[in-house]
Length: 290
Picture (cartoon, rainbow, N blue to C red):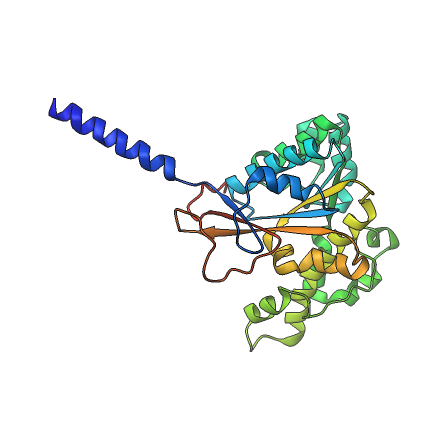
């Protein structure tokens, strides 16, 4: 009888505390919690939404799918999807998969997919496929970013004209006025070679500028373009956001940034927290996909 009582108490204690666990919380820029239904309602008013992510966060990817599904309903299908994880020259392969011309294997064999595509990005692509939505491959082919890091932006001028169509229109402005880039410079250290440091930053800039141009080329009046990218590409309203602002300051854009927290209540972090329009707080020990 005593053992049964102890078991009941343990189960009750565990159940009580399990109910208190939080998988995520959203906050607005002022630090007020916002429920997902209201978040979706507000996002529907924007021309462009950047959904930042930690690439290996399971809850981050699940929320991207759920927010996208909610936006689709709210916008009555007036939605365009795009992602950093697909490179411009793989747009034909992506289109073939969306249209049903390619099956999953043909798509995998013909495109440069990230290793975590099956678990983290395929659900988004399959949603676009099912709803007949456009899904834009926004990023620069990685070989050009690698070339920039090694040889500098000027080396891209020598590329064939067809290759240049996969890159944002040259020349690309690279400046430390862009939020996030000074942080990259600091990461390289004070003693790092100046040219090497700027090439490193330029490699990031060519990605941001190309994704910005890809979005601008594909936005449509009345539709919301939701873009999935690593948190760094839009944090603090920098990166892609900054490059779009230089070309079209009148677009209404929202950034969702992501932060990890060890606080079980997932309150707004007290340190290293620079909020954007909407801010996703997730547990630091949340399951990682790789």
